[in-house]
Length: 339
Image (cartoon, rainbow, N blue to C red; front, side):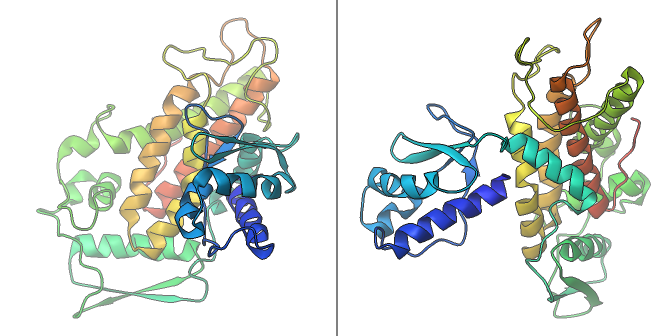
């Protein structure tokens, strides 16, 4: 069960409680599920009870207790525990590993992961001034809007519907990829920096981190092929050796990366509906920053033999590369295999 599917499951539980007269609230359009915080447990947690408490006229803890049996009865849910002021902590049933399901979904959909129908059948008019940044933003939005089933149409003249702050100088000397990033990464109301910082290959450059994380993911696949093993979504831990924090500073679990990958569809929808490609650019940085420590743990080290955990980590690395490449492509930026 993916986080999106689990969110829908939680909404169904709320709807059942309302239909049976246990809660008197308007069922929200969406709820958020995240990895459990401090004091939590299970695979995911949701604050839906706290979200509904005011309108229900009941304490969050009581709302959570009402929702618990409805949620526990849903397919794919193994256990539900209430913690803190009313957080619902959800453990998925056997065979429903959230990470394995998410990784399988990304690998199955490829570049189409995150595409939806939020703008299905809609024509989005992008009326822009004659300005290089406006042109670049509109061009990226045409691609992003298409991922949500819409069609972007770029026009020029007044009154404009899209007017990002112009670049202070011509970005062309930066080269196509760095120029695109320089114009798209800042929010529309921020003035872009047209500086050589976008070209340096070091951690201070967000574009470098995103492209480097993609290259590292692809390198992991090449390394695994040389060692004779392939990716397979599954448990990221080794039953005999525990987690695999092989590299200094590597996380014991890749929860931040899994969360960032699971959030990609929502970010893509927001970028399309709010006409904000900068949201996508910034999220790619979030994915890359979560991925880089994890990618150091994918391949066996020394005389270590490839295990099921290594195959699962390779699958997660490949899913990460897919998301980074897909996002960069929507921004009109190349995703190099080597860097």
